[in-house]
Image 1 (cartoon, rainbow, N blue to C red):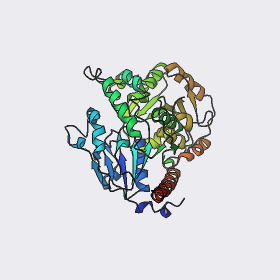
Image 2: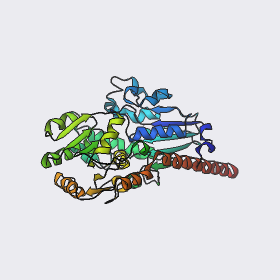
Image 3: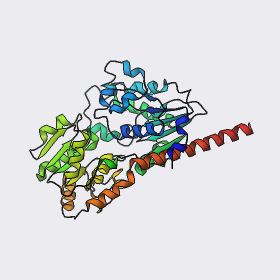
Image 4: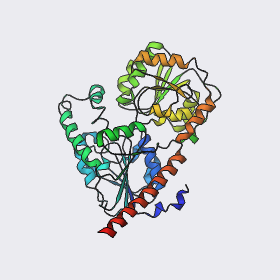
Length: 387
């Protein structure tokens, strides 16, 4: 659709987002937020914590409102310590001036309180992973201090109760994959619409030849399972390049053998170059969607992914990648060996990635908001007429 004809820019609208302070700052949630801002350019941003040094430079031109957590000690850098306060923090935002609120949610932000007659659309990246289905996995892989461990079960119980109740404040759920759609129904008993997130596939192009290395790109956090890749490539001796930074790096780098290189954070141009030249992209974690594998496919490179989560919706077996079934080093190495015997077609892989383009997201989400607003107004008019 022609987004300029929808008059969305004339709405009294606000965008609410979970914390904008994450190391690495250009993950899927931030890319969705940039796209939402293009759909609703007039909308101010409401967020729990904002650290402009960690975010893309375009954020500095936005009107950003933060919660009281911003002003607490280490609020911008160690905001995780204030998780028990975050439900209260988001409920303090005054959104009574807005007819439309779009929340970009993966932690607590969907709990904002809106006017009864306002429309609240939640773009759900995931129900809170560490409180719901990945709770026990987080407890086992996250590095918690001795004083934190006994408190976590009580905090998560409170958070799950609040999270379930606050889901009823959302009028319409949009989600980033069928995988997340199932979890929304499981934990909230709410219907949702799948609109895949935006991937700037135009930034990438296939190369003619590949070099002899495998690649991982992303934040080094426990659930992404860099540890599994390090173990597998330590065993096989195949060359692996890991781009990105995060708390897991200091634990994993000493374990890695010389065939594994950690490059830290790199510019977009460097990342695109490595994507174009790698033999294949390694994706061992269970993600809700996974933008990095789509970027690899847009670069014409196959993806070797764990057969769970959003990868099942983005990677086509035998066409744009292959899967390993068990979260083990042996299973990953077997998938790598299979991939080495497949004659991959870079152009077909890149064409497959086009279905997740940024323009497609902008059109689909704009159309969804326009239709939803029209239906919301009709329902309000009908209710007024019968009252």
